[in-house]
Length: 209
DNA sequence: TCATCGATTGGCT
DNA sequence: GCCAATCGATGAT
Image (cartoon, rainbow, N blue to C red; front, side, top):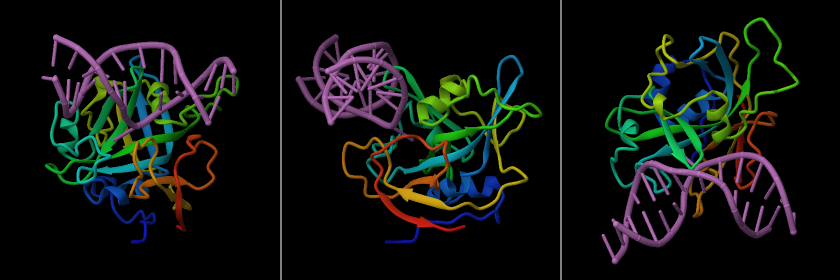
């Protein structure tokens, strides 16, 4: 089996997202998703778990081609793809690879960061450890579909923080498949406490740095 | 037009 | 471990 990618900071975020979606999943671990709420308050969360999807495999929403729902996946990289599922949850993805190719990284879990100078309120910790919880916590829904995450002036944006460092990654199969997942494309910040409680991912291998 | 089910979560047995 | 909640996207009829 091919080696799973490690993390490097040798490429700007925009370039990373324009490239291979599995490498993008690795590179997004440790990056920050910022959200400007309607009232102006800003929430930030560090991504600790992500999954890669590509149109060439049946687990991907775009496997059967372009539909109104997955339209954004075919667009330029760096856009936000939000879909609604199970009647009550939204899931957020970062579109990757070139326009015309449908590929995206599902953001499965993140660690909430303290709001600027204040410590996080321990009495009501924000739980973002699951794709549905992440969207609920950051108040993301389909109104934000197609948002450009590389534009810091928008309602949500992505960046690699100044203190970003490569971390140990664990790769497993992806979560929620109704058939055996052929790809270990779930990328987890090893042993990070904010990772989702999903139990069905099969451990494939670890990678250092 | 209809039936099925999902890239989920939390609660209960 | 099992299952309900809840509804839109999708594929079949």
